[in-house]
Length: 161
Ligand SMILES: [Zn+2]
Image (cartoon, rainbow, N blue to C red; front, top):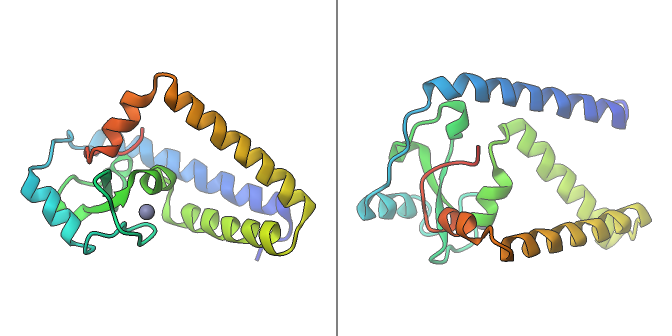
């Protein structure tokens, strides 16, 4: 389906452009966020039997309420649009459009195979950069951004801007 890497880049760029346009439209329609009651949070958690809707893993006490249709696209805060997720999975899901997120997952699976199974040197270089990126993120979190991430990890309703 793609001709070459430049073709992939063009397609991802177009998906990003569409996402940002949708976000701009969604801003007007967005309803003010509200805190969920304990009963509402339990109802959201029960929808997946206590598992993260992104990865399927069991949730701990740090789960968050995620929007199925992202808030940025005008998705509502009603229970029908909410599912539980790990804070890190919800962070990775961000407000990517569904096709965009599918390509990100496919690229991640391909990258992992190139790195772990096929020892592709380019994948090893990227993996090293990824490790350094993750280390910088953890360091930043320790140096003062803890209050932001703990709010997101405590089940607050909302999506990243
Ligand atoms: Zn998860």
